Length: 169
Image 1 (cartoon, rainbow, N blue to C red):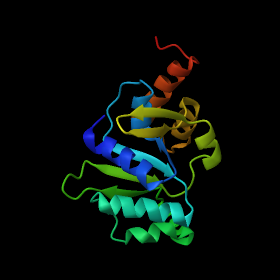
Image 2 (cartoon, helix red, strand yellow):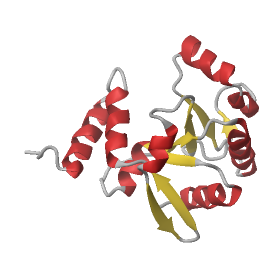
Image 3 (cartoon, rainbow, N blue to C red):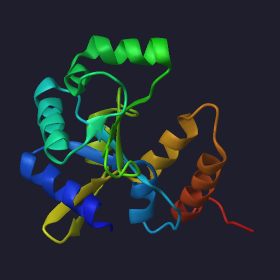
């Protein structure tokens, strides 16, 4: 794992942020080889948890990609408006000095958050624990993406192989 990713997970633990890692990095940590640059998080969307996350992201140097204050993420009405008006799925935080370092936070739970947590796995790193969405939940989230992107179709195939549902010829 890259040092900035390990730092993020260590700080999430320290700050007590409730989250589940989803997306490409979660797939990689389940042992499937693929490239990914961003970190996709399902963060518990209660105001207190989002406030902790935003403070942490700011302290680590991350800023919203969109020209809005990060605190706007806390308001459910803003999140709904961004989804309806912009078709947004996530709120992106970037490191302005290294823009490939980005964190995408879902605007709405991709699946019920309690289920994501209950079926997630914990992986230990040096001084941190990362909560990773289950293979099945990752597959379900990828299947919900419309229109599907080529990488999503490949991810679904690889996840199904890992789940033992399909054999790749």
